[in-house]
Length: 341
Figure 1 (cartoon, rainbow, N blue to C red):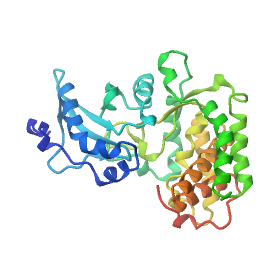
Figure 2 (figure 1 turned 180 degrees about the vertical axis):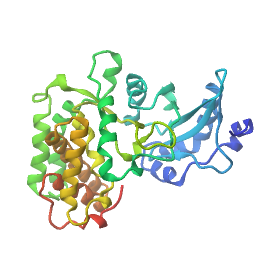
Figure 3 (figure 1 turned 90 degrees about the vertical axis):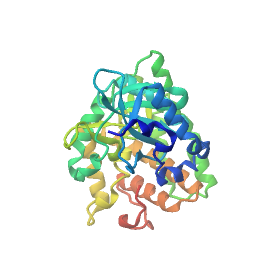
Figure 4 (figure 1 turned 135 degrees about the vertical axis):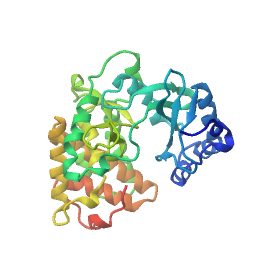
C-alpha cells in the first residue's frame, strides 16, 4: 500500500501517453489533462482515500478515463477500491445511473459518485486480466452469462430517463445515414446501406416492441470484462458501460469488431459468422437481429471514420458489416492487414 505522502500533488501519478493523446480529440480534453491532478487530490480528500500505487506503477487508462487504485479508510478495515476519473462527455453522463440499477449484478459495484466531476468510486477488480486472455472460441459462454445478468427490463422511474433510446436513435439514423453516405460520395455499395436502413426502420419507434427493451451495455467488448476475482478466468464482471435502452442484441457488435486477427485464416468471414451465432446463443439473443444491429453500428462507424480521414478503420468496419451478412465486400485488405482496435 502506498504511503500518505502520495496524497500530495507531487506524489500523484502521471497520465498514460495513450490517454493524453486521445484526450485531444475530445472537447475540453486538453484542459482536463491539465487539471486532473487537482480533481484527483480533491476526490481523495472528499472520500477519505489513499493511493495504492507502488512508486512508478502506471495507472489504468482507456481512451477517455483514468482508473487509479485506492484504499478506503472510512471503515474499521481498509478496503481496496478504484477511483475512476472521466473526461466529461455526453456518453459518460448516464454511467452511474446504470451502475446503480445493476447494483453489482453483472457489472462492477458503484460505491460513490461525484457527478459534476465525472468521478466514480468502484469496487476493485483484477485490472491486469480480461476476457482478452480467454481463447476466442471459449469467450461466448462467459460473455453470454454477463449479458444475461445485465439485460434488466426497462423501467419508468427517474433513473431510466437518463438513457438514450435505440428506437429514437434508429428513427433518426434512417435519415442521417443515407445523407452522410451521399455526402461522402457513396463510398460503399447501396445494398449495404439498405441493409442498415432496414434494421433502423424495423426497430424504430413504429416497428419496435417496447416490452422487450432492456438496459444495454453498448460497449461490452473483451477488454471491458474483467475477472470477478483475482487469478481466475471463468467468471467476469463488466466495466465502463455506455448504457442505452433497447434490444439486447445491440450489445453484440463490439465482440465482432475486436480480435479479428484471431479468426481462422482459411475462412475469416465464416469464422466471424460462426462466432456471432455462438455469442447470440450463449446470451439468448436473436442471432439475426444481432447481425442486423452489427451492420447498423459498423455502417455508422465506417461513415464516421471516413468523415474523420481514417480510411483503414472504415475498411475494418465495412469488412465486419459485410462479412456478417455473408457478402464480404471486394477490394478490402485481408483481415490480417486491417487496423486493430
